[in-house]
Image (cartoon, rainbow, N blue to C red; front, side, top):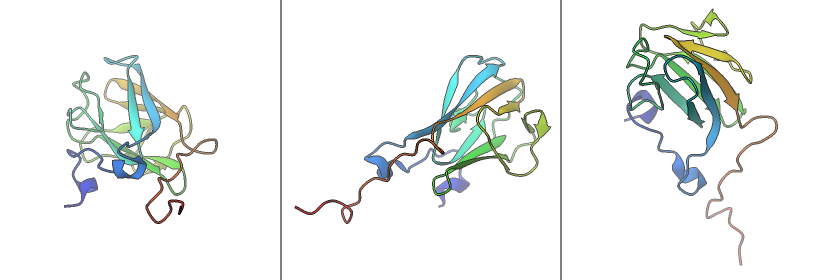
Length: 142
């Protein structure tokens, strides 16, 4: 089974940083039922929906689909973020424009799903990236 094909499974990439899947950015709810709440984004794909098993679970907005309504990905090789539509009937909007194909995100872009508006706040990028975890072959020899 490929983990990315199953949005009900959380990321299992924690081995990269000694058991921690580090945060690479946040979504902050600026309007809607969960106004003021923040959601952590992690490396690679982050599924967004109402189901509690989503990476970004917006459970308080009944107008958001339980299925993935959108996906935010962080590319650790290029240090870029993208927003893509999900598999549900619900639409996602980026800065008031409908998202019909993957589009690059910029700091402080606004994403709208249902009655919820989210502000995108990146951590990793031009000014900061998490260092790669040392593997046994990378470790200094004594």
